Structure formats: structure tokens, C-alpha cells
Image 1 (cartoon, rainbow, N blue to C red):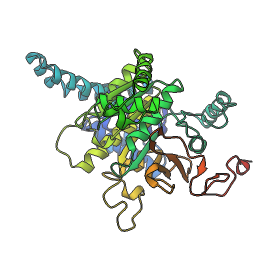
Image 2 (tube, rainbow, N blue to C red):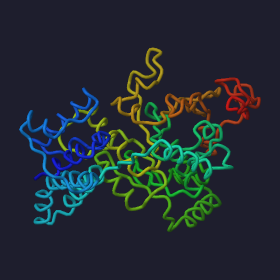
Image 3 (tube, rainbow, N blue to C red):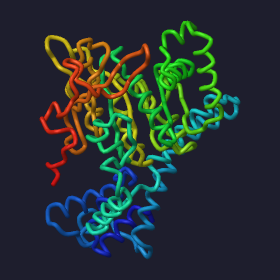
Image 4 (cartoon, rainbow, N blue to C red):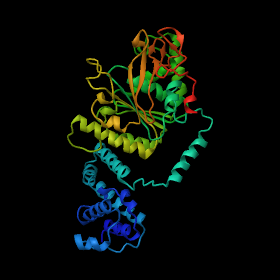
Length: 427
């Protein structure tokens, strides 16, 4: 007799309607399991009580079996069965690749199988009562006492970190800009500062090779103009300084760069996360990744599928993801400002992101020498804009400390007018 029917029988026997919400419907096989599940759910929604097993027998000619084990036992059994069936769909591909010793195909199939087990295995059924949930909040308050409100991973931009509280576990922070505005540098600067603060960083790029990423990181770490570095227009003194900087970083295993190109699947990144256990992941050009599912897709469908998978992975590993993507072509034209509605490719980007930040040319007299980081969405209503330098000779991406229009110190929040050190609104 099927595990799915035994699970449903156990739910009716113990009278536990809440368990219905813990079942992933796709775990049930087509046929009488799904028919019985749908009948029970619909009956409970309509009458606010579970049906008697005899009603299924009378209405559906389905007789539920004995279910001597616990509900958790049968929940795991149906999930395990579903995972096995999903993995089995890749088995023929794996066997064919093994027979021809096609290592690339073997690697791709194994990654897909791993992605299936990670996303469809015994699911997170973290159901807690209200007291337990609030207890976790109190524990976090105790753990973060004395941190001045910055409880997550910092960017090194003080006002920005004050607004966000730092990047929190299970957040997706998405930076959006038109091409050539500076998305890559904005992510790399944050990744480098996270590394300097002691974090284990995984940086994924779909738009640059490893050497290009390395060159930009040398510039960020030393302040050397990246153009002079690229063209080898360096004095002997500067070259010695760069060599010393690079030598000091040889063998460092807390900052890994994964240059994946435009055809990499998100499952590749997932495998690296499982291997290296980073504290935070940065993905530059996330819209170029491919979903695990094969088959022809329009770009909107593909990017939406990638973000669906990204959010599932984000919740599973419970660390921050900082990613970049683009506004569509309408942004900036005919007075149309960049907004959640003008993010390119898919509505899933704005939906799944905890925080969305637009990168725009800056507030200074020379807008090319600065950038505005404007909050378009916040997990807790974050809003406003933070100005940063965007200079290369010497390189400087620090937060603006002066109002460069007047040269006067910034003493109040440009959005609210409150003093920068004021927290009276929280009292």
C-alpha cells in the first residue's frame, strides 16, 4: 500500500489538519493519492474539519490503509520517494555519459542530480509555535548586543550599513543599473570589504574572466588606477607594492572567484557553496545564469526560473546573496526613472529580493565621479539614497562624507532631514 495514502490516513487518525500544509503536493504520485489529498484539503477548507476515512471510501472508493508509524515517518517517506523518482530521470543520461567517458557530461548530470536532491529532499518543515519564534528573536538580541544596530555583514559604507543593519541571513540583495554604470565594481568593493572583515566570500561572475576580476581587486586593494594597471603604465615603486600585495594573498582560501560565463547553471554555484561553505555569495550578472531545467525558454522565463531557484537555494543555505542585474531599455528614457517596474527580464527579481538598490550616476557636480545607491525596496521599509565616490585616479569608492555640491559637511539625512546620528524615532 502506498506511503502517500498511509500519510493521509495518519493525518485523519490523529486529526492533524495543520500537517496538510507541510505536504509538498508534488511529492504525491498521480492517481488515488492525489485524488484523496485534494478531497481532504477541499473538505477541510469548506467545513473547517477533516473528513472521516469512511467518507473517502463512500465518495471516492478509496480505502485508506493502516498507518502504524508517525506522521513524520510518512512525510519523509513520500519526500524520499519523490526525490528518488526525480533523480532517476537523470540516470540514463549519467549511464550513457559513463559508457563514453564523457567527463563534462558526467559532471553536468551529477550537478543536476545534486540540485534535485538539494531542492526536493526532506524539506525544511520548521514549524514553530509563537513562543519559540519569539525566543529566537530574543536570542539574536543577546548575540548582537553592543553591535550598534549592525547585526549583519557590513559593506564599509557607514550610512548604508546603518540603514540595512548589514546583510542578513537568507537575504537576496539585488543591485540594478543600466549597462556600464558600475555594477561590477560596486559588488567587488563589497566582496573585498567582507573578506577584510574576516568573512568567507564566494564571488561569481558571468561577465568577466578570472584575470579581469583579479585586476580589479588589485586596484581596489591597492588604490592603483585600473587603467594604468591594465596598460602596465606602472612605476617601479608601484609595481613592487602590487607584487607585495599579491604575495601576501597567495594561498588565501577565504575569497574564491568563480568565472562561469554565460551558460553556467545555478547548480554549479550551489555545488561550490556546498563545498566551500561561504558566509556570503556575490553573483555579478545573475540574469545570465541558466536554470537547472533544460529546454527552450524565452529570456523572461529563464531569468524567472533562475530567481525562483536562487531564492530556494538562499533559504536553504541561510546566508546573504548579493547579486546584480539590469534595468530594461525603458529606464532613463523619456523621463522614466529606474524602478521595480523597469527591472529587466522578470518580475521575480523584485519579488524574491529582500532589498533592491538602484545604482545611478551620482549627486556630485561631476556625476561620473560618484554614484547614488537608491533603495527601491527594503525588507523593513528601507528608503533613501547613499552617495559614494566612483573615482579611479586614485581609486576611491568610499561613502561621500561631504556634500560635494557645497563642500559643507553632511549633517542631516537628505531624505528625512534628521541628524545623521539621530535615533530618536526609535525611542
